[in-house]
Amino acid sequence: IGASGMVASSNSVTAADGTWQVVQGFGFTQYNCSDYGNGYYWIAGPSKLYYTNATGQNLANTSLWTSITTSTTWNSMVFGNNTFVLVGTFGNYAYSTSGTAITGSGTAGSQNFNKVIWVSSLSLFVAVGNGGNIYTSPDGSTWTQRTSNVSGSLYDVVWNGSILVSVGSSGCITTSTDGITWTKRNSNNTTASFQQIAWSGTRFVAVNQTTNWAGYVYSTDGITWYNAAEP
Image 1 (spheres, helix red, strand yellow):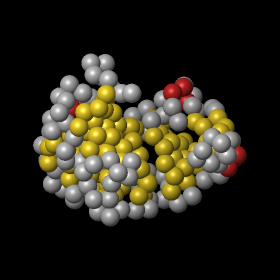
Image 2 (cartoon, rainbow, N blue to C red; image 1 turned 135 degrees about the vertical axis):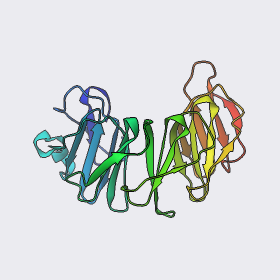
Image 3 (cartoon, rainbow, N blue to C red; image 1 turned 135 degrees about the horizontal axis):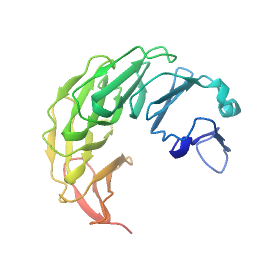
């Protein structure tokens, strides 16, 4: 998914043994998120939401995609606990248990949400956003605000099996082992804007996306962080 209504699909996760095809006909819209669950694919973006149960080459047939009416800009979605959960601007969230319609929607606060994940071992959806906002939900319907102990915008969050790490603007990093209690960590770089974080299996890596410092920070435990320049 991407800009100008671009949607591509493949029958493989690698370019070497998979063929990518472009799904066209969704208009000139930026698509921000997608996921798959219980036989359905979902894609979403600014005031756009589509789903299909097509597979393989049929994903390129736009007539097999169904539009769901929405006026929200959706920034992130995840499938977990047999539920699609979407989060977007101005604290908006929505969820679907059927895969073919929005079951319920609402707002949790008023700040933009930037990322939502499902943590199966905690039985929690975790959503992070602007203003250091963190909300959790067991089902996508009822959301509870948590104290992040950071004020910067949180752009991403990841779980490695034992600890949640969320990163964002002004070099902010906050962690939690249960999704409820969060602790601010020192990134050693207050000018960075960490847009993404990943867990490699042995370390966390958070990538800076500002021009004042070309580098990233890394940690093996999510607690102690080290700076590294881009190669």
